[in-house]
Amino acid sequence: MISIALDGPAGAGKSTVAKMAAKELGFIYVDTGALYRAVGIMFIRKGISTELNCDVEEILKEINVDIKFINGEQRVFLNGEDVSEVIRTPEASMMASAVSAKPPVRAFLLEMQRKLARENNVLMDGRDIGTVVLPNATVKMFVTATAEERANRRYKELTEKGMSVEYKDVYDDIVKRDYNDSHREIAPLKPAEDSIIFDTTGNTLEESVEKALKIIKERLA
Ligand code: DC
Image (cartoon, rainbow, N blue to C red; front, side, top):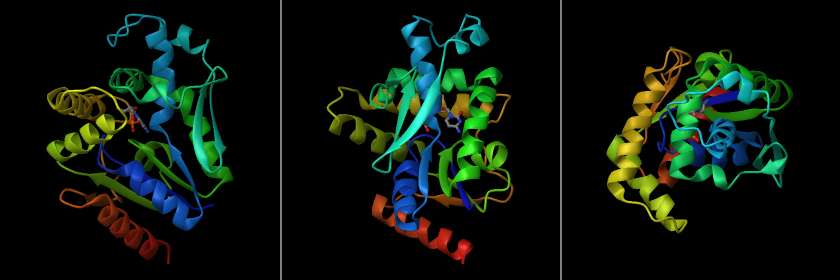
């Protein structure tokens, strides 16, 4: 099986690049952030704050996370409920980042991700795919862009979905999440030694997709 790891910070354009590239290559696109987000939703529903003053392992026992591909698109389920939309709020983003720093949460989701890659040709988007989940991935790419540009894109995406958000809050959340994700002890956000660094700053999404596809195809050739 062929696996392509696309890691990088929030808003770098990973998911768009990954989706389009997966379509073109006929691979399945796996958005691993959605798994952490689904776990986070359970904590939010239990009224727990991002400090996570709770027994994380006990709560994990009550959680079943599953993903299904419906018409080629990934949907994520929390205890049988399709939470693919509710996981997209800024609150869910911050909680996903908080729970993802907990080793039991990472262990809980690891095998599911590896199994998908054993059984399918995948393009997997996340933070630690090239470093931890699939260290033998066929191609590893680290997609990045400046925090300003990522905040601009995220702001546009959220407002286009009809969410009422302030640019400054979006920017602050991006910077905070970058910090959390890259400073945690376990599986921090960082490029794998053998990953190709791809900076999308200044590119339109179409340009990013085109350039990424060119790099991937060259590596797969
Ligand atoms: O990619 P995303 O923004 O949907 O991810 C949400 C959070 O989940 C992110 O802030 C960190 C965490 N995450 C992770 O730790 N490892 C991954 N492979 C994917 C996401």
